[in-house]
Structures are given as C-alpha cells and as structure tokens.
Length: 229
Image (cartoon, rainbow, N blue to C red; front, side, top):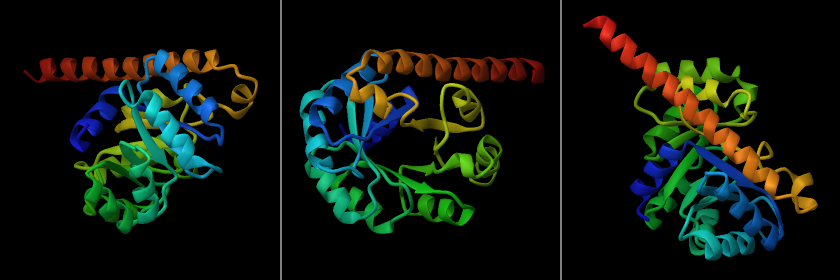
C-alpha cells in the first residue's frame, strides 16, 4: 500500500495501537485480537529484544488484512531495518530528519514525534506525513494540542502519551487526526497470561469512542453552517 493510502487509512480509523513484546506469538495473537475489535492497525515497538523478528512475524501474519507499522524508531537505520521487516509506516518518539528522509526513500508513511512548537515546525517542514505530539500528558494535554492546531492548521497531529478511553474523544475534538495508544489496549499483564480477548473489548470501545467524538463534531459543524445561512 502506497504511503498516501496508508496515511488515509490511519486517519479514517483514527487509532494506532502499539504493542511491546519480544514474543512473536504474543504479538501475532494480540494484533489479531485488536483487529477483531475493529482496529486494523498495529504498531510494533522496536524498543524490545527481538523487535525486528516480532515485526516480521506480525507483518507476515497480518499485512494483508491490517496496517503493520514500526514504533519507537529513532534513526535512519531503524527505518531501513523496519521497512525491510515489512513495516508499512514508521512512528518516531522524537524528531529525526534522517529518519524522515529514509522513510521517503522507502516510500512509507512516517509520523514524526515532537513536543515543542519548534520541534513541530521542524517535523512538519521535513515532509513527515504527520506529527505525533508526545508525550501529551506532559504538556497540558488537549489544551496544548488545541493551541498547536491553532498555530499550525495545515499540520496533521497524532496525540500520544496518556491517551485512553476516558479522554480520546477530547483529543479528537481538540484536533487530533488520530491517537496513539499502548497499554490502554495491550497491557503487559494481560499478554503475559494470554488474555487477548480483553484487547478486542478495549479496541472496540476505543473505536466507538473515536467515532462518537467525530460524529458529534460533524453534527456541530452542520448546525453551525445552518445557523450562518
């Protein structure tokens, strides 16, 4: 899938669940459970042992039915390795121009991490497909994201870090085109005991919350348009 189509799909779904595990079988089963909950997207963190093997296993099992990406990518070499392992998109925790340039070489979408306005500006100017504001909880959350959206209206923002079921709708209404979640769906404890069904339940609830937030926004926009006429 071309990177523009990949990013379009990410925005349509609005949620990027991340998995951290060094066990290939756990990752494949967790991804399946999340897909069953209505989120056909998964991000495999490269911050764990055997991460590239895990990414390769998930891509082999699920890349025909869901988007498989690599997260916690910090440099160009990480992008190269992830792309060769089957990643369809890249997520970075901070901004790396070299990583963005390498993603362009492979023609895969990249969501560059940033927090400060300067970092957002650099990431946006680099040609990254979206800017991941991370960690949101460290910067006044939705108020901060809304402020950034006001200054950079042409930038697509993904909210990550402290985003979960209780506040995901707030981040969507604040202007996030998508949210990034980790343990809010796939926590270590549940994975350790093989309780993948809870991932399906959590994924379904998050998908519904995001859809409801978007529906409310669309309804409000339609009402305001009628009022202006």
